[in-house]
Length: 498
Image (cartoon, rainbow, N blue to C red):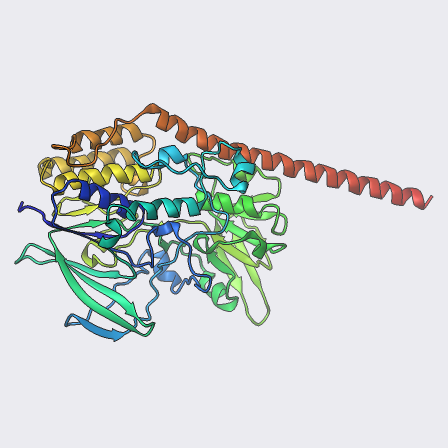
């Protein structure tokens, strides 16, 4: 492989931010460029403008996991065209009270601890030593990583990578780039690099399973169907008849937040499967009614009907809102050929979740499911940087293929394949040994995995469970008091008639 001297990073979220530092510390590259389609760094940790409206433009494509289409690229570059009108799912799921759900120490990068700042709500929920952080603290943390050592000068913001192609003649990767101009036009151009690191994350494109009648409900009653990505404030749903679908992190948080706000009972579709960290504690709230999967929906704009039918034969009429906390689809609109190979929400042929086996000058940082998140990104970024700097070699392709085959046999060919839980230490240590130590002071050093990281990680989950337990008991106590008051009022009323 020819020496790598120029590298493009796609995305300036946490994965992209740490990749910049990992590459820069190798002191081996002439050019590092970062392309970020939002107006600032932070990825899914920055809030949308207040006037941004999230859309669900095509329910069939969303259910088929193909809604994020590539856009036509001009035949000649550079050029200027009218601004594209295709919806790009660039918004985030940030809401005002959002806090991390992972221990800050376990989540942070090894050399850059999270600041010891906590919101008042955070402290009220989890105490003054709460391990969690408000989203604004995370946003600032990521931005501060890029606002050092001149890294901010490497980033081109408001720039969308629309196409990535390998030029077989030059051996370089050509990126086709688009940047809006004056709200009316798009400026297009291209730049070429020896290698590309994809750090775009995968919490962008909502997934909503196919549900007969859902698209019609959304059309007949605009705003009645939402994805958890658009969740902002429980007050919007006060007194409303709501169905929440999903029992992973977002479905759990939203159900618990609405249990004392929406019309009682809140209807939660859970299928009997819960998040492996949090189980069903949040759904034990006395105001939550667990429902089986939805079979179909009937709605009529003329009659006002909005009826949801469930697998057990029951139905719920006059539904005001259905909120889907059903996860996201990992899409790669700028790599259309690879995008077609994504199956079961994972990209095949990624060795160690990082290197594209057919051409390891294409690397991925963050192509894993939830876990230690930021720290995992750091380990992957350092491993990619060491390889691109020419300091380490990858095993033969047949060994890389075997690694993937063995993991499919162990985890399955789907999202669990990308989930490091429960084998965090094994993965961290394997990546650390592959990356090795810095050479002559060049490169970012990876510390050995410490069991205290996992202990803090697990302890933080218990704190969230404790919060739900307290909330459940407080709700039960309010119900007991209300029933007692009603009984007393009834006794008084009967006495007054004697």
